[in-house]
Image 1: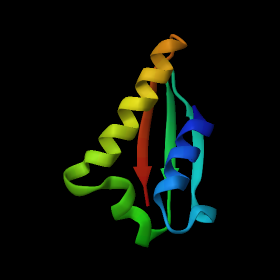
Image 2: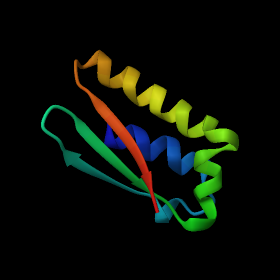
Image 3: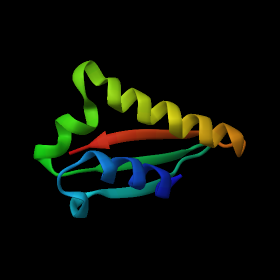
Length: 76
């Protein structure tokens, strides 16, 4: 899952070297924390959060295929 988020995000931003994805193991799920450069935050979130929602949808679909529960958080 981590690699999937990195690939998608690096394609969207101007500074792909600043993209970081951390995995935090929860009790019943995996939490992915996505961190990008502050000037790229708008590109990752998109208008009214549409791009962020699309990334979350792709990650949840890939996780469902592996019978896992994954949540994506975009942090600064």
